[in-house]
Picture: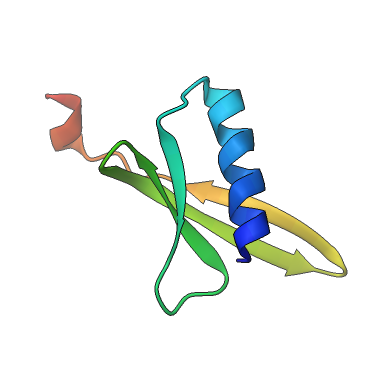
Length: 70
């Protein structure tokens, strides 16, 4: 992902989740995805999907049972 894409995605996610501490960071050696953090905590990955001339972004977040306190 380009730096411009990352900035736009970060602003969008901060607005949608009402979470100014959310950050989108470029992944080393990966051009089709970026990492998502809240503060210092990694929470997921954003993937860019280019299909038939259209671009979409998918956010993937794993929630471990351990994280639920159960």
